[in-house]
Amino acid sequence: MNTAHHSTAPAREAITHLEIEPSVLYFGTPVVLLTTENQDGSFNLAPISSAWALGQTVVIGLGLEGQTAYNLDSRPDLVINLPAPAQWPAVERLAPLTGRDPVPAGKPEGCRFEPDKFAAAGMTGVPSRLVRPPRVAGCPIQLEARAERVQPDARGDFLIVEALVRKVHADSRVVVPGTDHIDPAAWSPLIYNFRHYFGLGPELGHSYRTQTPRDRETPVAGPALAETAPN
Image (cartoon, rainbow, N blue to C red):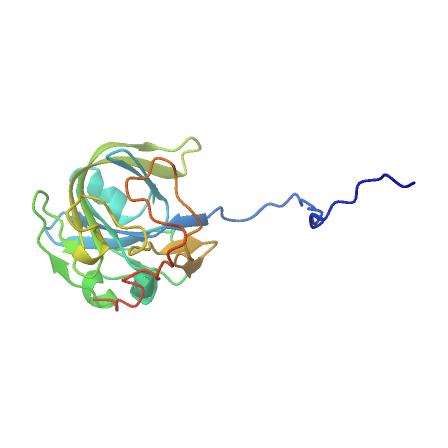
């Protein structure tokens, strides 16, 4: 008698790992737009693809030669604006621009000086409450902050900025009514994934620590701001 056990579970596909050397490691990071104050009192607007939050501190990676790094050296106030996925064309319009004149030698080929980045991107600035740099009107989440620590990274190629958030502005459509919580079903960050832009897909589940749990059997609609046009 054959007593061997035959599993009905699907066979796992074998995974083969390759040793590679990618030129960048942007494995799904949120895009933020930073507004800072220029020396003449005007304002700079710059897209950044290296940012993460720990408590009320946002850690940002910057190029050494950009106008943002130059501004934060003596004027530490800034606004961290988080665009919605549909705003990616405006973000990309900013990508080849710099607020430095002349253009730093380390900037990518094709980069050009632009003194009015808001106009170039088709975006509008609105006054902040606690800092001089303006918020970006079309961004659903805007964080007024102050750079408390700016220092080179381990290799000296970039700057690491630790910014303490002082005021949070959130579009009412992404806030859970009657709370101070962002509704993750209504909000989707713009994700920079190996130099391509993405939004979030459907929810898979939630952490046991969430304060906004939902019934997994209830269908979750796409982010409320997925079709918000750039302002």
